[in-house]
Length: 271
Length: 136
Image (cartoon, rainbow over all chains, first blue to last red):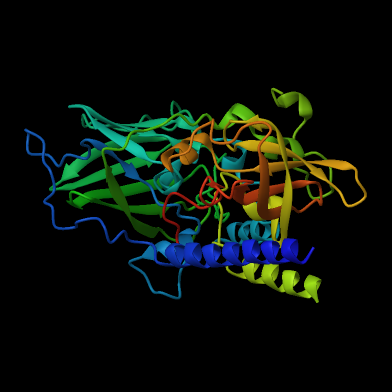
C-alpha cells in the first residue's frame, strides 16, 4: 500500500517536472533561436524573390489580432464599430465556441497566414498559389497578370475573395476583395463584413523568415483601416501533410447554442 | 494527508501546464483546464482521425464497475511530425493519462500525457503545440 502510494507520488512529481520543462519551452517562444537569420534571401532566375524552396513555411498560431496591430498608437488597437465590439465581447464570453474554423470551414483572409499547420507558396509566371495544410486543406490564388478585380455585380463572395498581386521591389503586394461573411478575422472573435478589403505585404528578409503584414480595410466593421503583422519561420526539408479537418469533427456534434439546444441539425453532419 | 498531497500536486500540475492546446476549435469551450484528471485504463479503441485523434480506455471505478473514457489528442499530421505513428498506441495497452476534463462533465478529456505501463511516454506531450503561439 505504502509502496504503491510512493510510486504514485513519484509518477505525479515526474509529471509536474515535465510540465514545468514544457511550459519553460513554450514560454521561450516565439522566435526559434536555432534558425540562422543571416542566410541571404533566395531569388528566382528572373530576379524575383523566391518564396519557396525545399521546405515549407511553418505558420505561427496567431490567436488575437489585437496584439498584432502595427503602425498605430499602442492604445488605439482595434478600431471597432459598435457591432464588432459587441460581437467580440460575446465571442469572448462563450470561449469562442462558435468560431467557424472550429466547424472545419476555411480561415479566409489574413487569418489563413496565422492558422496552425504549414503552407507552401508556388510561384508561376502569371499567378501565385498558396497551399494551406491547415484550415481544411485549402488553397488560394493570387493573379499576377495585371488584371483588375471583377466589378461588384459579378464578384462572387467567397472565403478567400479575389486577389490580385504585384511586386514593389522585393515586396509582394496583394489586394483582395469579395470576401463572404462566413469567417472571422481571427480565433479571438474579431469579425468582418463583406465590405472587407485587405492589402497584404509579404517579404522574405532572409532565407528563414517570411514577414507578413495585412491591412484590414472594412468600413462595414471598423472605423478605419488597421494593420497587423507577424513573422513566419522556414522549415527546411519539411513537407506538407494530409489534414482533412472534416473527417471526424466531434466538436460539432456536441456543440450547443446559448439555450442548450444542438447548434447544428444532426442531419447536416455526415456521421 | 495522502489526498492533500496529491491534490496539491495536481494543482501544481494544472498551474504549470503549457498554456494552450491546439484546438482547431476552441479548447476552452470544450475542456476545462481547471479540471485536471489522471486515470489509468486499458485501450479499447483508437480513432486516428482529423481534426483530432481519439483513444478510448476502460477504467475500473472504485466500486468495481468499468467506465469508458474518451481521450482527445492532436491531429495525425501533428503527431507524425513529432515522430509518432498510428501504431504507437495499441488496443490492449494499459496507460495512465493526465489531461483536462470536458466541461460537460462527461468521461472525456483532452489528453496531455500518456504513459504506458512500462513507463514509456507516448506522444510526448499530446497537446503541446507543434507551432509557435502568440502571446495571448
